[in-house]
Amino acid sequence: MEMAIRTRELRKVYTGPPPTTGISPFGAGSLKARLLERLSKKGDTVALDGLTLEVEPGQIFGLLGPNGAGKTTTVGVLTTRVRPNSGEAWIRGYEVWQQQVQAKRLIGVVPQRPNLDFSLTAREILVFHAAYFGIPSAERQRRADILLDRFHLIDRANDMVLGFSEGMMQRLSIARAMMHEPELLFLDEPSAGLDPQTRLLLWDIIREYQARGKTVLLTTHNMEEADTLCDRIAIVDHGKVIACGTPAELKSSIPGGYLIQLRFSQPAPDISARLLVLPGVTQVKLSDESADVYADRGGPLVTALVAAVAAEGVDLIDIHISTPSLETLFLHHTGRSLRQ
Amino acid sequence: MTKTSLSRSPDQSAAQEPERKLSYIVPKPVQPAAAGTQKGINWKAFNAMLARDVHVARRSAVPLLLQTLLQPLLFVFIFGTVMTRSGLMPESYKQVLLPGIVGLSMLTTGIQAVSMRLIMEFQFTREIEDRLLAPMEIGWVAIEKVVAGMMQAMISGAVVLPAGWLLMGRHVGLTLAQPLAFIAILVLVALFAACGGLAMGCSVGQTNIGLLFSLILLPVTMFGCVYYPWSALKSFPIMQKLVLLNPLVYASEGLRGTLAPSVPHMPLIVVIIVLAVADTGLIMLGLNRFYRKCIS
Image (cartoon, rainbow over all chains, first blue to last red; front, side, top):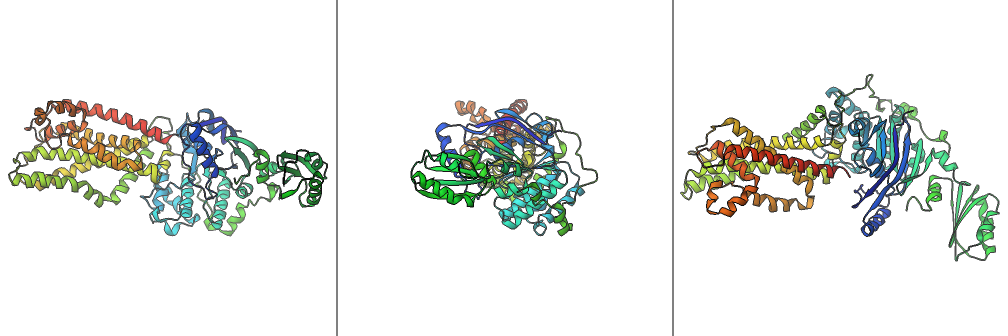
């Protein structure tokens, strides 16, 4: 079967600062700040480090990862805006860099930050976009009407977009990307900055779009979004795919499922043996003053853990239970929280 | 959570809001005509972009026209009308001045039309990203901007010339002895302005745009033979040689040569060749800058 999207060993190094990708409301990227800081010392930023990916047609595929993981750069490469230093990317068999025009016919792109034409009204933005793709005039108007209505923008259809709220601009950006009925829709952090109600509307619309046989690739660092919306997820960190599968597969891949994080008052180098023998514990990752315990149960294990730590002669200063989730998975693979 | 429990229910949402469903699938999907080759131009996309620029320009036609007319007409009024009628300048100065002013207003209009829009679209609204994703080689997006800028420059020339003529009243003494050469020079000057705008708009950031106009445009204007013919510089031999590097000199001389052939001017063939070379150079530079700005 021909893949909707395929990349092989994509590598991208920015010699200057990486292109600004807009500010996400979730913590505005302390990692990005750190990235920039590191950059000013070393000069280069590795955005993609051998990223390989396959997306089957008809799927909603999620790229999940923290800020600065390489999600936006991946979308940039696939949408012809970023030239990789090495590696290849295909959209439906068209090599994205060599056959840009053919690839661009098949894709619709919703950027992280709305990039609407401030000299036009909402309707004109949709209509002109469709005209760029050669869609006849009557059909342009018809599609614009349907999309404006579906995105609850019909009342403001003839207003200039300059006065639109962020959420309205985001909705219009998505409507614009759908105007030419692309086979593949790219959405870069689509629900960032949307209120919960609009987010649900957006999820519905994305599912409807998929139901018509289209492929959707979205980037997100919102676990809930990835979990409920995506058929498959690739977890990206430091420019690489570190895990890929359905949400269920990914979650079941965590040893034990539950993650119990313990923090001690002082280093406890020999505690692993005591913890591993406890019922249900499958794996223990020890670092200086903390231990990540993977187990098939959560709460029922707490008393036994507390006793084991006390027997080792150290004080327990914090204990945290995470239920099976993508967050736990991310922690498992990277040792960092997705929200960091 | 298993896959079956994912709340994927397009049918359900359709039942709730049947009238709002994305039901615009067409029985026969609209397949745009071939034009899918890598380098070939996609006229549909190109024309649609041009239509968009015309649409926007038409919407702000009045302020745009006032902006185009004000400065040149003030110049014409003070130097062409006030100074000549008061006897400070001879009547014949009118025919020296007007062609220069036409060239200058074409230059400023064309540069502004392209560079200001590009700076806005790249840095502020980023709306150019949408056009870069149109099914067309991205160089054509820049060419479209140049064509739109040329159109504006030509319109500005076409408006300033009769308006200035009217304002100066009698004894302007312009003729149109060589209409073909005049049109050729007009097109080359418009192209020069628009390509200059492309190169500048893709090289300068939002914050430096004021600097650009005062540091580049003002000297180019003053040493551009706008207000005096090139032959008048013969008492300043070094300057007369140096200004030959300034393409505006050829624009002014060319327009003067076709509109007021009695004023001493450079041979028109030289003007046309130099302008053509300058245009080619600028468009290559502009496209190069444009690509660098579009692709990271």
